[in-house]
Amino acid sequence: AWLKDGEEIALERAATFFGPTSLRIRSFEFDRRIKAEIDLPARNRPKTVTLRLRHPTAAPLKWVTLAGAAWNRFDVAKETIEIPADRGRVTVVAGY
Image (cartoon, rainbow, N blue to C red):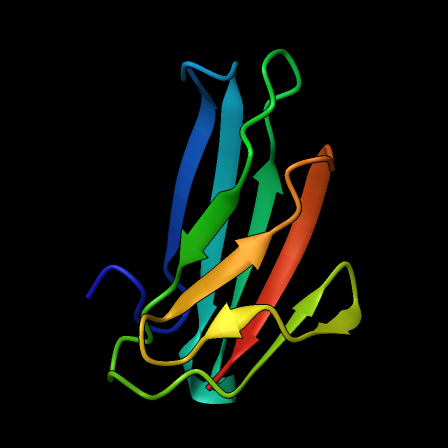
């Protein structure tokens, strides 16, 4: 229910071991996509960053873009997307 069409989840400057992290996830359920904007920590970069996005109707993940370009580092079964940790701000769009 958190990601029904038009709903949004957001964290602003959440304290983590790696440094402050922000995240904004917005659902476009009827367009069969979810958009995530992530500000990755810079102080102590993690080795990997994994984002899990679940469609509100349990539709399977079909495609992903990272910074506007096609991205193939995702796992359909686990509903996870691998994100390069060496970036500052990233935009991920998941299609279902």
